[in-house]
Image 1 (cartoon, rainbow, N blue to C red):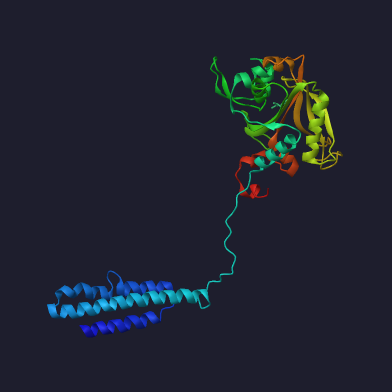
Image 2 (cartoon, rainbow, N blue to C red):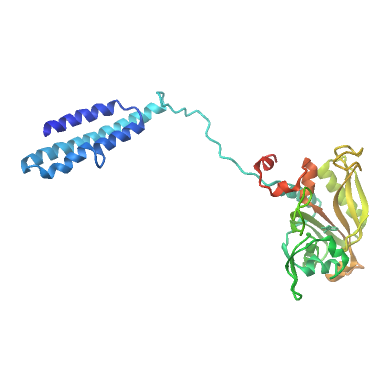
Length: 341
Ligand code: PHE
């Protein structure tokens, strides 16, 4: 029996010396020292031996176990070192690591920040408001009474049409004009970025969820010249210092007079191309002087205070700047699109 043990020891050590990789080392450990390994079997069988022999074999087997454990650790270390400084399984520690992919800001967030920057540098403050809105703020307080045909301009997603408290998803950021004025006294100068909702079939230029940025300035003596100057400056900052702007009459119930503002086409320089539908102009926002009814509604004296307001479609601005032809890309979650910005 002691002879067998000796043989087992020499065989185990010889095998171990020839091993050069970590996987084979594990096989070796299982074969000799594992639960069903050769040495383990011998130790288990001890109880069947006569008492004298049991002592001798037990002691010898234990010594071998200790020795094999030590040899195993040594071999482990040797293999590891070999793999670091050459040899068949060498690790090149000078290779660059695997990069962790970094996320980035969504294009909508990027353009909102750019637009906010343009206005905050002109003294505007950024505020935000609720997306679930009451009929009062979205329509009534903006001089759009119930059953007024102007409501057709905003296809509305209703949360509740309950007579007492009709509730909806805001169709524009304009309700924030009223909420801000209710809380503050002039001078007021805010921009309000935020998500808006419309009950609309989607296509390349319409989404039922989109962002707007509202602007509002109210004080003594604010005139249409202030509106023009501010929005002209904005257009130049976003679309280039050489931009021209054009204002034309437009109708929004909460402003008087109301306008839409266009910039001269930055692709064709105004000659006419596909982007500007051969007109040379691209419409970028709606604006106007705050309607006296809206001012009176929040308790401002409309004989003393005047103001201007504007609203622009955030995605549209980004699309124009980058030549993107489908608004649905903003919510498509397609990395091939998002990664470009
Ligand atoms: N709220 C208007 C819209 O969504 C845009 C607008 C805002 C026009 C402020 C004038 C003044 O169509």
